[in-house]
Amino acid sequence: MNPRPPGQVRIIAGHLRGSKLPVPDRPGLRPSADRVRETLFNWLQPMLPGARVLDLFAGTGALGFEACSRGARATTLVERDPGLAEGLRDSARRLKVEGLRVVTADALSWLQQDPGERFDLVFLDPPFEAGLWEEAARRLGPWLASDAWIYVETPLKTALLLPSGWRLHREGQTREVRYALFRSGNGAAPETAATIASEPNPQVTPSA
Image 1 (cartoon, helix red, strand yellow):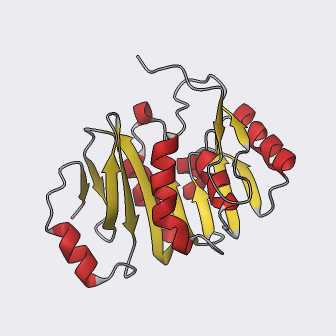
Image 2: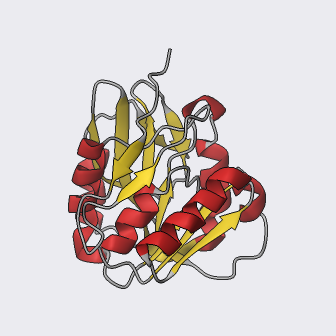
């Protein structure tokens, strides 16, 4: 049984450091743990200032708001639950966050439209029981900048087939989840991709 979600989650660093975001008790709502987010954003810090960010399954908005706090230029949060989406807008108003917009939509349907922009960073962390990683990854291509970063979080023993153009940059795990940061297209240096490809990684596997 999944543990009951916390009542709130805090923003770890940046100009919103210490601010709290509510975590309603909803099925499948599972904010990334503080430890995981801190590691991820340490990896991302050099590229965040000025970045265009997409939080595709926003939920509590913890990843998107953290990106805003650390210097992202524009952040889009997609959330299909109208109540959660309105809560995200309330948090943005309360915290006076600029450059953040909330879209109330099903993520997979939203990705089917013609891209209005391309993103430098995408958070791909859907509800675990929905199993939407691979389909969302397939539809993301037109929305990605040529050297975009993609963050993927899964249950620990879940194997994925991801687009062949994605190159694993870094990964980690806790007792419950595996988290990985990829780079699309030509953004990864050849020697980096070769080094990562030579290391066994049965959990997250690029597709052919």
